[in-house]
Length: 114
Length: 111
Image (cartoon, rainbow over all chains, first blue to last red):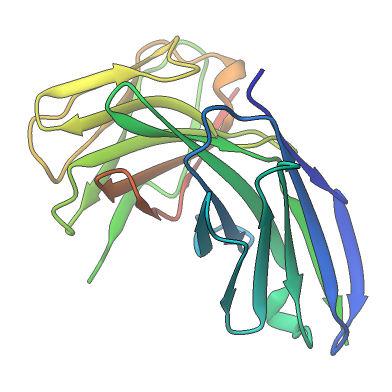
């Protein structure tokens, strides 16, 4: 079954600290893996997109890693800011029926406290 | 650029009522999608379209209908609202199905 599992479900950290969010997937065939940030009451916004051959990709203080062999990804946030408080969603894409189909994880809710 | 615009932002419906959720994009994307997001769950695909005049079912299409008469617009129709359709609905668009842009969502409550 095509699934995307994220951990932890929620996380509270102090401003300035680092954190790492995890994503495991069983989606096949794999096309690419995306991390999205979703602020409360808003739509998801793309942070990174990685294909099978990419091991790491950064976007400012966000760094995503991908191990396609173990089907695991992580999102590392460095020097967290209050504005990082949001849900972070791991999404795996598979190509079928002439389009990409996205399989969404349920997200990790991050709260950054001052 | 406006990107993907959804209206309304909030709506309360009574059981059995009908409504249309509007979605418009100004990026000339061929692909458009409707998702629903239930609390604590990942987004689920309702319907998608790969171009004007072409629509197809996603994972959870029951109770919904769509049309795609133009590249820009992709409305989602609920004919007989049920409490199970209480959710947040997101419209998205992409070119070649790669980089997705999401709207800000419509929060629908059916009572």
